Length: 177
Ligand code: AR6
Image (cartoon, rainbow, N blue to C red):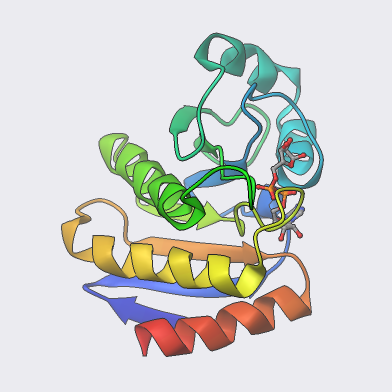
């Protein structure tokens, strides 16, 4: 499913964030220490190899809502953008912190002249953010920012499984029309 807003294509697919061969920058749902973890952080670090953790070490720790950019090592991309999402119910206000993740990640992509970015559904795994609410924040934030993007022309949401894809499809229709 695709929408075009201000000349930026926004799409949802189901798949693995570590296998997005045609995308310049993939976003990591990171931990504060930027170490290998479970979920997205596990998949990306395993596929990237140990060089990614090494490059991350001097950049850590990061705070909820922050993002940093590194090379992609053995991943089929040019960059990894690491975002620390809010822990639902603990880092507040969670909607603002989650929006900061998307905004800061896209700003780093712009600064690095990246034309395509793939996001996972940040905070909706180990960090417990209800997916429907998180998807609303994600699409609203992306919608608002499209007018300012000069480099990024494709934003892909890579969802883990058909249920997650369906939630995002519905929300995308609601928010982006
Ligand atoms: N590709 C795409 N989406 C995935 C993948 C994948 N390979 N694996 C899981 N998801 P999470 P968080 C989905 O837990 O909630 C880590 O251990 C998953 O179903 O990766 O931000 C870090 O070390 C969920 O919908 O990220 C941190 O400590 C979404 O991606 C903490 O978890 C995010 O799940 C970050 O928690």
